[in-house]
Every structure is written in C-alpha cells, then in structure tokens.
Length: 256
Image (cartoon, rainbow, N blue to C red; front, side):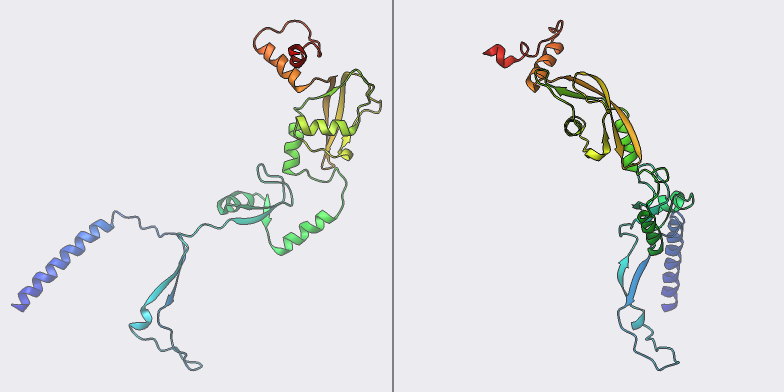
C-alpha cells in the first residue's frame, strides 16, 4: 500500500515538473543587470589563524537583503569636456551625463575625460594660464549669446527737444530693457564720433573677451509707452494713416 502511494506521488511530481519546465521556456534567460548585496543573518565565529571558519550547515546559509541596485536610481557619470559639445558646454566644463552617453560617444570620440583629481588639476592650471584671445575657446553660453546678438537690432529713443549725447550707460540700459542683456561698460564699444542726432549707427558687444559682434543701432525719437500702445492699436484697427506727431497721438492730452 505504501509502495503504491509512493509511486502515485512521484508521478504527480513528475507531471508538475514537466508542466513547470514548459512554462519556464517562455521566459527570457537573460539575467537582470544589477548588483544585489546580502549579508548572513547569523555571524560566522572567528576561526584560528590559518584555518577556515566553521560554517553551520543550515544557519549560515540564511541571508538577508541589504541593497538591490536593480531598483535604485542610476547614478550619472561625471566628465570634463575637452571640446565644445552642443547642449552640454565648452572645454573644461564639468558635466554630469548618462553613462550610456558618456561611454558610447563622449569618451570614445575624445570629447571628454573622466573627472579624476589629476584631470581637474590640469584644467585648473589651464584656466590660470592667460592665453591670447585667439587661443581661448568660447563657452557654450557665449556661443548662444553671440548667435543671439547677430540677429538683434537695437532702437534707442532720445528726446529731440533737448541737446544730448548718446553714452555707453544709455545703451547698456537700453540693451537690458529691450533685449534682456546685461552688458558691462568695458564690453561695449560705440563709434568714435559723438552721437548727437537721430540716425543709423552701430555698437559692438564683446562676449567673454573673445568674440565681438556689431549690432545695428537706430536712434529714434523718444515716445512714451502709452503713445506707442495707442499707435499700435490704431495700426491693428486699420485707422492709422500718414505720419504721427507724438504730442497729438498722446491719448491723455486728447482726453484733456
């Protein structure tokens, strides 16, 4: 009786194993990339010098999970750029990028190096050395600023009822107000002849002491913001004809 029950039990186990083996074949055999850290639940006693520790056959095979890196966020790779890379930075800039981008493109193509203490020291020494402007490399932000300046046109409003001379301070304030550019005085250059009347002129802006861009500049008659809005409203409604006088176009004076 016991022998018959044993045979039946072994047959059931064999069928279950075959069924489970069929299901296992449909799964991927590729191991998950990651590191799992575990430690023994029971500490192993110290052994004598020169001898292997004595492990318990069951107790010292019990482990507990410490860390599963498969579910932890991937850390980025810290690199130092050796050349200007679009949307990342210029030479000497320390950036943090994905490991795939750094190992598959930046490092093999020589666009970056690892941010090791030795490399950091070399780039710091390179920054200390004052080279000629022709030898220095523009930063990524500087390149974007230069490209923006090449597309700009500046209008400076001056009153015509008083004598004036256009100065660097006025142009810098106009650049900040109209183009949102903070330009220091030493980076701005105006024509040698004084600008005392309306007309077409130019101004030059030097970015990081390397690239200089000439911007067309128009000196026009100063208009109040309300006057400009009123003219724009007339143009949008199709009622603007001919030339406009500043005083006659002011809505406040018309209402009074």
